[in-house]
Amino acid sequence: MSERSLPENAASATQNINAAIRSRRAVSAVPARKTADISYKVKRNLGLTLEYLFLIAMTVFAIFPLYYVLQASFNATQQLITTTLQLFPQSPTLGDYTYILGQTSFLHWLLNTTMLVGGSTLFGLIISVLGAYALSRFKFKGRLSTLTFLLTLQAFPGLLAITAYYQILQSLHLTGTLEGLMLIYTAGSIIFGAWNIKGYFDTLPKELEEAAYVDGASTFRTFWQIMLPLASPSIAATALISFIGGFNEFALANLVLTPNAAQSNITITVGLYSLANDHSTPWGYFAAASVLVTVPLVIIFLLLQRYLQSGLTIGSVKG
Amino acid sequence: MLQVKKPTIALFLFPTFLFIALVNIFPIAYTIYISLTNENTFNEYLQTYHFVGLKNFQSILTEANTALIPVVFITLLYVALCIGSFLVIGMITAMILNDKRIRGLKIWRALIILPWAMPSFVTALIWKFLFDYNFGPFNNILRYITQNVNTGVNWLGSPIPAFIAVVVVNLWLSYPFFTIVILGALQSIPEELNDAAKVDGASPWQRFREVTLPLLVPAITPITVMSGITTFQMFNTVWLITAGGPFTDITKPGATDFVMLYFYNYFTTGAFTNYGKAAATAIIVFILLLIVILTGFRLTGFNREETAK
Image 1 (cartoon, rainbow over the protein chains, first blue to last red):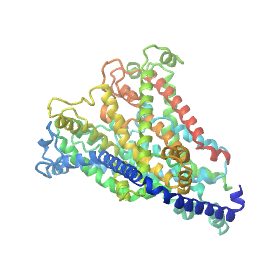
Image 2: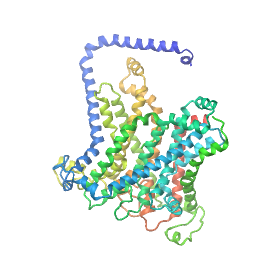
Image 3: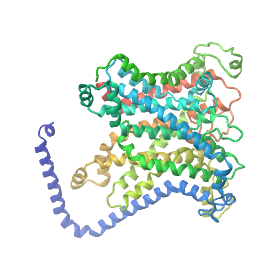
Image 4: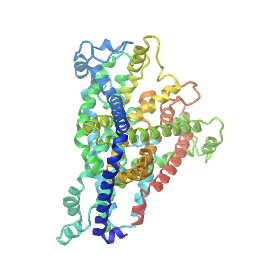
């Protein structure tokens, strides 16, 4: 309380304390240094060495799977079927890549997934941005209970209702199609999107809209031209998270899509799963395909990750 | 709050409600409906199933050999092990990355959060190969160290190693998120606090316990709760690696048959499926989750600000 009522005094008091701490440390450090110098230095360096060792261990842990798959993708396919340890390609080749790009429907899978998830992310964003704005700004009965209700619905794991999804798709004649999956993915991204973007709208001052109304702008125009651009960090973060979520979805896609003979109608997750689990296909093919998928995604993620910090208001959602 | 005409409000909210009604509410209602019937693979085809009231619920909760209890138990064990390891590893890496004496902090940071940037389904399939008994590099490393071609852990083929394997993979996927959040919280703690404690003669452990940790709690609690919930609902990664196995007894759930996997397997692989009973189990799990989530939100004060408005 006192800090708030007397900001200047408080600030100067803190400064005084800081100065006191500094001088006290300087004074006490001088005589202590001579006697405790060696053991202090050893202790300090030991700590630092342990920290470096831990960092190295964590880095190995973090990059080993990526490194292993990368080197495997350049390995001649037979070289992987071995019981001796091999961490470098014996005779590097691009054979696995030419096989994946030429002999499989890999590019179809990638295209299917990109269109499917791109579509569901876009539709999901349009819908949730509208809902989020209404839930953040408009005064209406049942606003709070709607928000709680949405969270409650989110607690229902969609996987438990697989048969119900099947019923919906059947009655809409969308079984086995990417459009059907797009519908479910879209809906799946709405609740998180609405909550997250709503949280961001909450932080924007409402004087912005009041000023726009005074200038004669309509509700929709104010929303579209003023509020939406301001909310772009949270929209970007939401888009990234829905995109990653949809891209990684496997359970429903595996159930809904029936692969045709060329396997050209499935998503990348289902396709890679079949590559990894078909014992007649060498693992090197899978390795090359996963490098082709992973590298662009890592680049997108690294480019957009700064939005994740500013645009995530709920803050605690994993991709 | 803005005063806006009702039709405008309806226009903004309509698409959200439409989709939610179709893809969120309908499935829940449908599941509740099925849970009150005796629908199964045979009478589903003939459309001859009928209402049985709460019989499914009764049989699930009273049956001695019901799979629900062991499945929920191993799921909770998995959640506890995962969250514990996320916190420990996330905390240690964050504290080290917050140490200004370390050279090249930015590079270390980028390397250590790399798993976060990779698509999780791809890495799950990669990990599956890393654990492979015959040709996986982990066993090859063991063989190299012991110089014995016949050694090796049957990682995915025996219950305990398989369980450890899925914990390790989930740790790999999730610790970067904890590291980043904890690092952010650490950086917001003013250095003066630690310095003052140092002057007062506090040991590093005391400083951590009494100064740093209490200030980290507000940042750690929500991510712990959220992560606990997502781990409880874990499906993709574990299914891609073990598919719920290894199964030692055909009538019992597998060693990594966590709640969601158990359901998926039940619905998709069984020749005879008792939909009514499965739906009832789904509803019970939903209620359990709801209790956990609502307590979690209350605990973290997630919704407090909103309801106070």
